[in-house]
Image (cartoon, rainbow, N blue to C red; front, side, top):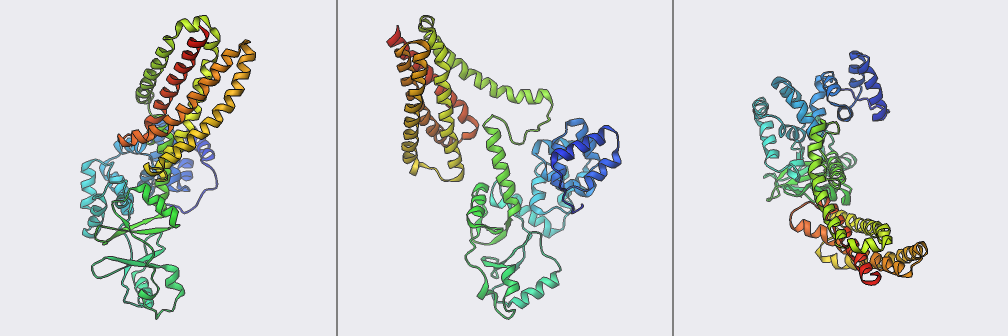
Length: 452
């Protein structure tokens, strides 16, 4: 695979490839793909509908296919794997890092996985099995077992001669890890320290004991937070006995951060981050129908509440005109709180211990905004319909709904998390239901009491 990094953006490359495919210039397509990184090829494959995508995949160089499959989202990868022969799949796995190979093996048919395992030597097979032992969303599932270890009781000169004899170091190596005779982690030896100190010094004298190892069972989002907090480029992974198992590098963490961002964004709309943008129409329709059905149920619930005040609305038409304002303002205010809490939970900044203070803050913000905007809406409504009572009613309903929206926006994520439901997935629908039902009920209820 070429090391050239294209300066063109994905949209420009997409246009050029589309024109080349439309003109039947297979040679030009192959040339364009040869000059791209595997991740760039993956982006392009995800940007094409099924027909052109399969043609494009056939033109991808065999040496690039393994890394490209790893970079693809799960659904697109699975679709391409189904169309590949066993020997092509086995060939695609050759040369992949162990952590990337694990990601790919989890989507391969069992026969192909067995074939890949049989083609490995004992050492590489044991390394692979060590990663497969852990869930993919943990430090153990992220780690790469290809590490360079040294002992504390040798000189830096011995380490340098060892590296020269070794001939090469694993990609993205910025640190060597110091272990004892039982492979327990003792510290880290950054390459900068190795190269800038007296070769006669002992490793024990210069190694960094402050780089704490990451337990293999640590969730991947906690791993990402550690890399952010401590500005790490790589970190050791250990078992419960501090035995060194492997390392995690910054490129693995970037993937976690990107996947988490995609997850949060797509879940807010009830979608999956691994969904194929160009999936077949009926397949996409079926997925979205479930979410639309749930939303329809909540809409009927809000409509039912409105229906209970049909006589009021028939007598005071102004209530029907102003009704959407109350629900809309509550929905926006609640969404602001909801997103803040979901983000805080994801980052570990919000929990039971500080929920009371956050509730106080969000209620205060809602009261201030509620009173401020309630006065604005009250004045406009009173002038519009020549009725002070309507202005007062909508102002009161607005304040009450914004306060309820703040309570719902903060409590819903905690409740869903306790129920082991992703707050980003169901939080928006529940919040909308609460703000619509409360908003309509309060506004129309007050209208019934004071205007009828």
